[in-house]
Image (cartoon, rainbow, N blue to C red; front, side, top):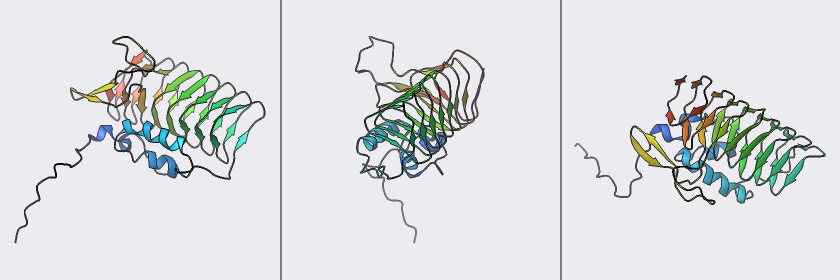
Length: 243
């Protein structure tokens, strides 16, 4: 007897293009249970809200630990900041929580990491770097003055000097708090991100040359090679080469 397929449910969740999923950009395995859980979000646009919720309720997210890293005398730490064992915040650095700094990472003098950010394992955040509302997955270098906001960064990414994400639309009046949704265009279709501030998603192994500025909602697939240029935007599939 041949069984017929049941009719699709009216409440079935629509499928998501693979280019909008966290797994397309970041290999999650080995990043620790918390970051791995963030990377199970349905789309990359959902990661920031999940991260904000977890950092606002760290006990519920299983983040509280008796293990503590090193916070050097002269560092400024404000609010809920978790520095895991093996991580270090150097004198002169400033951390404004809620923030999680994972094992093996170093936040150097005059770096600023602020509200609702996660610095994954074995990252180096250096002089003049500023990070806010972002996930930096692991093994990343941001060792010079640069800005990263409202973004997701994969493994082994290098962010060069004076690079910057931009998170606000500027095709109308700029107001704070922002009210206009950032969108991305995929195969000619405009897709809402659900965010009024969104920087970029940067896949594993990407190196941003010095001075690169990313438009709001830029999606850069893993393994993309970007040659020196001033401005990048749009959706770049994995393995792209951008001159």
